[in-house]
Length: 114
Length: 117
Image (cartoon, rainbow over all chains, first blue to last red; front, side):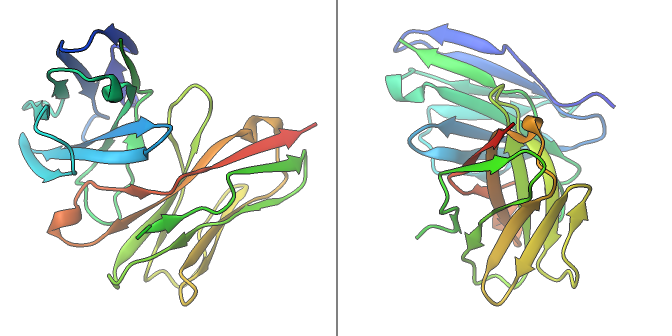
């Protein structure tokens, strides 16, 4: 089975711009979660999508949004980029996102905001 | 309050020796899951091992085992026979039960492991 894929792998943007990141889960996985990883804050949960619905959300401003399509592929969008948004964005998929489900991660998108 | 604490920012181990990476957690939820992931310098998080709060036995996966001490709220990862390829960052993570926790892992700050030849 193919693993989780994320595109693009690297992005450079300037402050004020917006960006869209894409994630394709493992075939058959319906839950997709997004995380932000920074040296200062570590790994933080952004949100989770299941069956095209946002089912859970972390403590991030409204500039961070996402969506999921009928084939479970997910995108996340960050509007009005700030310098502090520079991070590695990781997507993870699992069957249902429930307690015992293992999340499998993609390679990440490294976003640099100048 | 930190829910997952990894007190060892960095560790060294000699190749072929065993190493224990510490993880303590804090939750009032009786039902939870504990995960360990490895993150090489490439960035991808690789799943290693899972332990459920109700599991009676410690989890094992190849060279990885989890020393689960529920009363002490600790879930230490033991890597036996370390290899050079084990050099990476290791994260302990927890998922709690309940509808408000679907798809959400809480991570510790990580431990950087370096294996010396």
